[in-house]
Each structure stands twice: as C-alpha cells, then as structure tokens.
Length: 405
Ligand code: SAH
Image 1 (cartoon, rainbow, N blue to C red):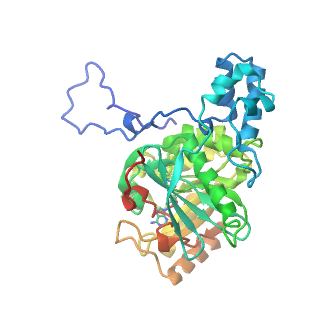
Image 2 (cartoon, helix red, strand yellow):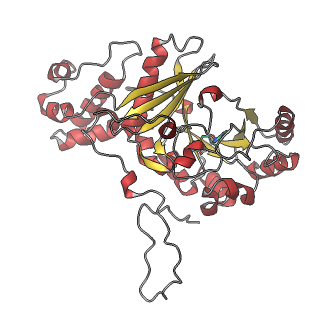
Image 3 (cartoon, protein in one colour):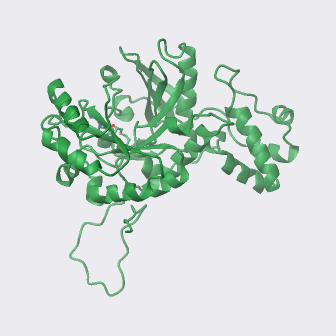
C-alpha cells in the first residue's frame, strides 16, 4: 500500500471541476521552505565520499580520479586517530603531499574544513553525562549529550533545530521546527564531542566514543537526506569509522520513509511507540493521525532487512500506558516482528499530567512484557539534573545568547 507523503510546501492541489470546498483549513505544510539549511560557504563535512567525488568530477576529473581523490581527502580530513594534530592542514601543499593533482585543488580548497558549530554551554551532570549546547553560524542553538559508559561512550545527536512533530511529552516538540541541520552540522556534533571526550580522558570514567544515537533534537526522518549523508561519512572506514551497528536512528514513526532508510543506510532503527493503541498514541503523538500503528507495523514488516531487528522505544507514563493490560497489548503489537523493546520511564516534560511511574509499576510492566517472550530493556534516565535526558532538549528555549557577529 502507498502511504501519503508529507508535503514539503503548499497546500494540496485541487483538480478542475472539484466543487468549492466548504472552507477546510488549508493543510499547513509540516516542513516549510524556510526550514531549509541556510547556504554559507560550502563545507567539507557536508560531503560524503560520493558527493565529494561528484564535485571533483564536475571540476574536470575522470570518474575514477575523482573517486580516488575523494577517498584520500576523506582519510586526510576526517580519518586521523583521535588525538592526532587537529585540524589537519588544508592548503595546496597539503593536497600535493597527499598526491592530489593540481586540477582538483581549486574545487577542494573552496570548501571550508573547519567546524560549523561552536560550544555555547557545557552542562556536566552529576552522573557524568555532559549536555552540550552548540551554536550554529546563524545563531541557532542545538544540543548534543555525551553519555559515558563502561564499555563505550554514546553521543546523542540532534538532526534539526527544533522539531515539527509536537509530541506532548517532549520539550523539543514544543519549540516547533526552526530549520533543518546540514550533514556537516550533524557530523560536527561528533567532531566536537570526540575532541571533548579525549580532552577529558574519555570523559573520566568512560570508554571511547563509539556509539551514536539520533535521539537529540528533531525528527531524523524529516531530514533524511542530510541524516543519511552524515551517516555515510561517519561510518566511512576512511573517515570516522563508526560501526554501522553502533549508529541508531530514532523516528516518531514516519512510516513512508522506513523503506528508504533501510535501503540507504546500514544503521540501526529505533521507533518511538510510547502507547499500546491508536487512541492513546494519537493523543500524545500527532504523527499517529497520519501513520496509524497498523500502517507502521506493516511498513516495518515489509522493509526490515533479513537478520535485522528494530528497537521499539516505549516511554512509560504513570497510569497512562503502564498497566499490565497495556504490556499485553504491546506484546501483541510487536508479535511477529524481529525486535526489542526499550522501556523508558518518562522524564519530566512539558505536560505535567505525564509523570514517571513508580518503581513497582515499572518493574511489573517490564516483567509482564518479558513474560510474553519480548526482549525488554530498561533505559535508566541519565543527565536529568541538567535537562539532558530524553525529551528534555530545548537548546533554543533555554539559552538565549546573541548570534556571533
Ligand atoms: N524524533 C525522534 C528522536 C528524538 S526523541 C523520536 O521521536 O524517536 C528520542 C527518544 O526520547 C524517543 O524515543 C522519545 O519518545 C523519547 N522521549 C521524548 N520525550 C521523553 C520524555 N519526556 N521522557 C522520556 N523519553 C522521552
């Protein structure tokens, strides 16, 4: 079945001969034209190897020379071991030393190699989580959260400035969408975090940064092109070398993008379910009006590649979706899909009526779900004291600082 697409702009066209509609409110486009990324000087980190090769081909290289140069540049600019001299030299001499022919220099040196973001605020939590507020060139503020763990450190990255999806329990959803992030702005969250993790001795007790989750501000599937490009650069063995299995993209459930995601990315998928039936899901997640739970499940069943599984996120709200019967409904919903369920006690968000359950109700829910044979994990809140936990990221609302001159 074909699922309707989100219009990028404009209201749906009327056909000639349609009776004049009794003034329905025009469908407001979810992603406005003004939400697109502003164009500054083109940046190196906005390119993956394929798009860089394409740029070099246009600059006069043959396809194979362009690919070879793109590979060398990826390795030089992004592939250094953490701790190596930064930033790598970016001038004609450095390119010549890499064996890059003069024909490619002008096109390459037109690209800005530096960071597109600067650190506006660092908020270290008592539990060692570090919330970062980052400022883009246009003054937009986004947040990333560095979460050290014993086996590996995780970075939670943002994919948009704000979010259009308006989930009732999420601070970012309250902001609305200001604009998309460029691929380079996504990658630069990782570059900044890598440098910080290193400077802090891999964040004091933690291990190296090896895990990325697109669970910060924004809906990654509403900015899928840039997210995919960033993932290709971050998982390129010549560049950042993240294992695809250690990159997780979390979506509210934009069902018509799931197939494209699995076709284009070798990364893990997480889907925020958060309720066991359509009525309750719709009441807290407007996306459900467009893509019902049945449509979502059908898209997952159809698109999940062999051997892969999806991670369902289920935020638990006290006496809203945490009854034993709800665990039964949830188990029935996920039956037949290769999946795990991540149960997340809710963090205090914009709606005071949505509160975390007691430890007893949490344990009972998890036991009931596991009892159905569902692989169930519990995500313990991290970074709550500094507003860095799931659903609490609201960079723009929290810090208002003048944009750089
Ligand atoms: N837009 C994407 C990614 C950002 S949210 C998505 O919705 O999946 C990342 C995760 O945090 C989601 O699973 C979301 O359901 C969860 N979350 C949002 N608000 C929360 C809150 N107040 N408490 C706990 N988890 C929350």
